[in-house]
Image (cartoon, rainbow, N blue to C red; front, side, top):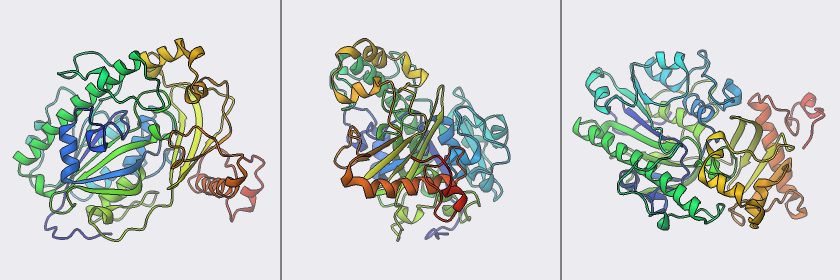
Amino acid sequence: MTAMAGQNRPLNFVFLISDDHTAADLGAYGNQAVTSPNLDRLAREGMRFERCFVTSPQCSPNRSAILTGATAHTIGTSRLHVPLPPWEPTVLDALAGHGYHTGLYRKHHMGADFQRKLGFYGDARTSFRAFFEKRPKDKPFWLQIGFTDPHRPYRPGAFEPPHDPARVIVPKWLPDWPEVRQDLAHYYDFIARMDAEVGQLMDLLHTQGLAENTMVIFTGDNGMPFPRAKGTLYEAGIHVPLIAWMPGRIAAGAVQREMISHADLAPTWLDAAGLAPGPKMQGRSFLPLLLGQTYQSRKEVFSERNWHDTFDPMRALRTESHKLIFNAAPHFPYRPPSDLEGSPTWQAMLEKRRSATPLHLRQLFSPSRPVLQLFDIAADPLELHNLVESPEHREIRQDLERRLSDWMNATYDFLPPGLGAANDPLARSWPFTL
C-alpha cells in the first residue's frame, strides 16, 4: 500500500462517470469544439491520463469491472444488464467495512442487491445537495455520480447555446456528411449538459469545505455511441478520458501517458484509503502515479466484448505500440448496438453504403471478419490495416497471441483460448487454435 503523505484523516472519494464518451471529446483532450469548462478545469487542477482503457466497451460489464477490479467474464457479468452477483465483493463493500458512508446517484447498472448495500441512493430528481445534507458528518464518504449523458437518444434543447454542426470535429473513421455533423453536435450538447452538472458537484465540495480532503476521479464507461466506437474493441470504443483531482496531493496540470485499465481503479481507491486490494482484483493501484512516486508501467491492457443486444464475443490486448483483436465469431458481420441502429449517422451510412468508398466504411459492411486482427497503433491509428499475415510482424503476433491466451486462462474466460497457458499441458492440447 502507498502511504498518503500528510493524511491526518480518511480521504473522501467522489467518482464521476459519463455514459458513452470517447477520450477525444473534451476540451482538455484537444477538442475545442466541445463545451466542457468544468472538466477542463478539473484537468488543469489535477492529472489527465492520455491512455486509459475500459475492460469492456459496454456499460454494465465495464462498470462491474470498475467496482470489483476484475474483468467481467471472471465475475459473471459479461452480458449487458446482468446484475452484479451479490457474492462478488466491491470497493464499496471494503470501504463501508472500514467506516465509509457510501452514496450513488442515478445510473449504476449493478442491480437491486447492489443498490440495497448503499447508504444513500439518489435518482435524477434528487439534488446533489441531498447527499451532503444527509451524510453522517463523522464518517468519510464514497460518492458516485452515474451520469446518463452523453448516452442516446439525442434531442434538441439539451444545452444552450447548442453546438454548431459546422464546427464539430468529425472523427476520421466517420463520413463527413451533414447528418453525421448534426448527430455529433447533439452528442456535444449532451457532454456539455453533463459538464455543467460536474460544475455543480464541484461547487458543493468547495462550499461544504470538503475539497481539500477529497479525491475526485472522472472517466467514461465506454466509447462514444457511434459506429466503429461503442461496442467495438477499436480505440474509439475502449479509449476513454480519465482525470484525477486532489488538491495539494496531485500535481496541478500533470499529464500521464502510462496505460491505465479500468480494473485499476478499485485497487487505487483502496490503496488511497490505506486498505489492501481484494483477493480477486486483477487490476493494480496507480496511486503512486497520482502522488508522483515510482511506478512500474503496465505492459498491456485487456478488453472484451460479449453479449450486448447481439452476441459478438471478442477479446483484445493492447500494448504501447500494437493491438491484437480476437474475433471469436468471425462469421458475424459488424452489428452496431441497438441505440446506434436508429441513429442519423448509421441510417445515413446504410443509405449511402453503396457509394461509400473509403476502406474504413466498406469494412463495416463486410459479411464477415478475420479471426485475428493485428494493428500497429502508432503507424495506423485508425486500425485499418490488418497485419496478421505480415511476415515482418510474425514475432509480434505470436507474442501477443500467447499473452492474450495466457490472460484468458488466468482469468477463467469462458471462451476457448487461442493458445494454451505456458505451464499447462492440458491447455496446450486444446484443439482450438488461432
